[in-house]
Amino acid sequence: MGKLIIFSAPSGAGKSTIVNYLLSQKLNLQFSISATSRLPRGTEKHGVEYYFHTPDEFRQKISNDEFLEFEEVYEDKFYGTLKSEVERILNSGGNVVFDVDVVGGCNIKKYYGDRALSVFIEPPSIEELRNRLINRGTDSLEIIESRVAKAEYEMQFASQFDVVIKNDDLEEAKAKALKVVTDFLSTKW
Image (cartoon, rainbow, N blue to C red):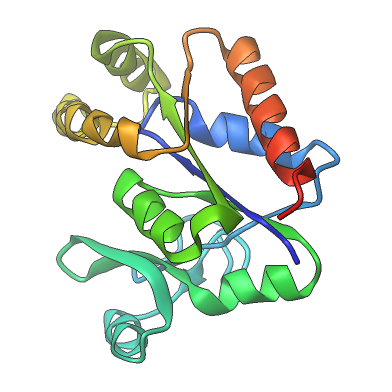
């Protein structure tokens, strides 16, 4: 039976880069595709980047208890992890890797307990996080400041994770993540 690895971090901490690195290793990891009620952007396709649902469809799935975790980020803009997605991966013999916000990460860990490893990617500092978000060039200063404020809040959750990896050197952080995940996957229950 497969295992679950949860990665959470404030926006800009390097979580997605580390998850993508791990997916390129021979760890039998499969990415858990999240569901959302937002519209596809660019070339995004249903079942590839996200499972796209209308807000009403999303609410119906919530009332049917189909989510491990979900959040209404903005009015009618939901994101969540479908139980069916996790079961699909586990039933195919894979290990599941999640890239989720910190509250979602804590909820998934509670649900699966010791079968899941939760990893928090910590930025070197709030100031460095702000610089990374600015250098990305994808958001306005107003959005960056709201993400920085959210990051300060999310940092308070780090102690609830099994492992905290400080990403002040990306290659070092990737190596630590690889070791932690490899060790977890090799342990027997």
